[in-house]
Image (cartoon, rainbow, N blue to C red; front, top):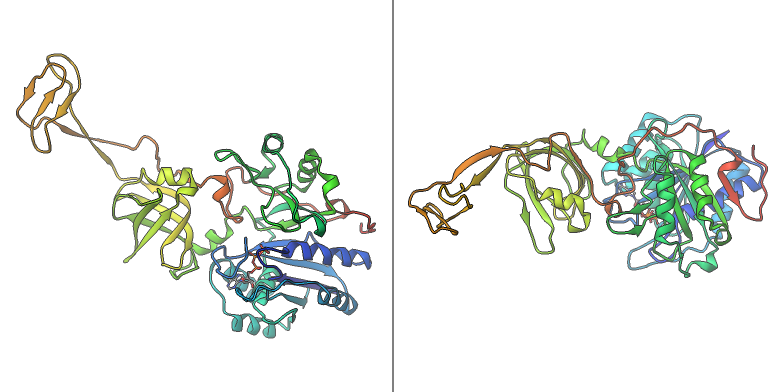
Length: 443
Ligand code: ATP
């Protein structure tokens, strides 16, 4: 029978990672002779959720299994050491099992909602009951059910990418990862078409390694699993790794923005993606952040291009009152939009005041003050009347249709990259994972 397994909310900031526990489950599955029907799914959900630890990741697996397998997995996780953070009331891990050959629309819609909105736990319980999905809270609290169900309902049939995640020994999680920028830059150059988000060239930062003390050693994202393995081998870090596995994922697809385009709810923590008009010139506030006051229908909102977003912040400064743009992002707790992406739809005409050159000496002239005459600094010639005139012109840097994205290190996991391409359709097999010291015989 086809069993769909969902898992979420297993870690806190200092320890663990849901994908690591998923890798442990996968190892257990293979060890007992069961097979995965597809790559394991690494499903990112609404990036604005306040309960998330890092990237709002959840996991699902599709297994050809039986009752025995379900018991094996429950027992394995019952013995897992979860580290409790009472201040954040975390983690609230939940394991869910759905026995079904296909995913009903109600569950697909639940996934879409989890990508863009804030879901109440009662709604998740209702969905689990409706579709007879069995779930097991592994500690106190059931919040993990939301992510578990959404991961089971995820649609990765059309737009998806892959990520090779390599893990280190749990005893090594406090050590430095020591991967040089130069090495990853070289890898990025060689695999520029088939991978994405390896480095931030503007900030000279490596992006394939996390910074925390979790078991993930590195993650390489891309569109072709075979290229991911080549890129991983190029880094030559095998001696630091205990296992690696390739996940199929919704990362790098902009799926949250695509769904939010149809959504007309503007509440804190929801995803936002709408065409808006700027009703004031951009304001630069303390810290260099840019505030765009925008209107959508009759609603006025502030949209923020943070200084850290680099290029996006610099381009946002060039916008003008009257410009029409599409803004993708998330609504924060103050009901402002944190901008992830801007598409320039229609620029208004720019007006520029030009002061003419002196007709006597040919040097540029200076204004004597607003509404007054002009004077030549070079030959002291004065013209007592207002001589400046207005020229209408287009912005030299912005063009209609332009897509403005942040520096790589400020992007969301779900954000689409410039080199986006349809991912390779590949059947999952034993070449797409490697567990050291433990031989498996999946074909
Ligand atoms: P990591 O990336 O390290 O695995 P994380 O950032 O994924 O951590 P979690 O610890 O999994 O964060 O916590 C996210 C929590 O938010 C989970 O309990 C999940 O069920 C819940 N959640 C996810 N999406 C939504 C949503 N749209 N509405 C409400 N709750 C959500």
